Image (cartoon, rainbow, N blue to C red):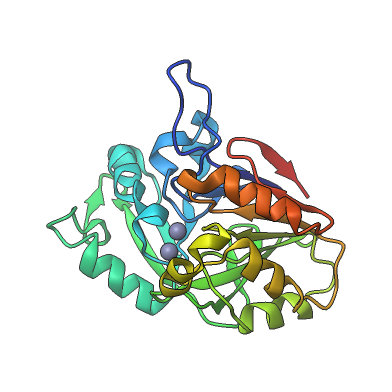
Length: 258
Ligand SMILES: [Zn+2]
Ligand SMILES: [Zn+2]
């Protein structure tokens, strides 16, 4: 399985910046998990192939350019953009984003080929199919309804924590997965901002280190993501000090294979 965390911004020479401001992972060039930078950083091949998007929660850094992406492709979409999310998250997207005020309600619109956007409600704790992938979603502990995911292609499995603080169901799901290859987990704030992390329901390196003790098997790669750009170096220093084998910071733009 090939996974890329899309860059959020590029410098004047077009080189991807390492700071992650927006969240969008692309799996095998065709399925997206969240859509923060989807209209900004997909290559042309990905742009022509990504038609399945899982939205873990409706925070702006995870959906910022989703409306623009659908708008960009509007006349050329030969199949609807499929948005997979829980009923709660679909309700929030319809109320707060695709509401005819912030942006058009694309789920009501058609182009020459048919509907341009379709919601697919996802179950909690039950496997569902997204393109060639099997996915299981469980709630995590964030300030709005949010799911963590395990995604499998039949050979390899990767878990995505999404945005979360201390949580239980996600670890239960991860622990039940035999042969998990990678865990992509958030580390938003440095330890000195633990109060802010607590009220906004995010991890610091210290709470992340505590949570990883809930893992009953190890050996998988652990990729830290969602480091707030203002504190990136500080968070990386604290993650390194945890001395957890196989814990690395995921680089935007780079393609990882599992
Ligand atoms: Zn969030
Ligand atoms: Zn976020």
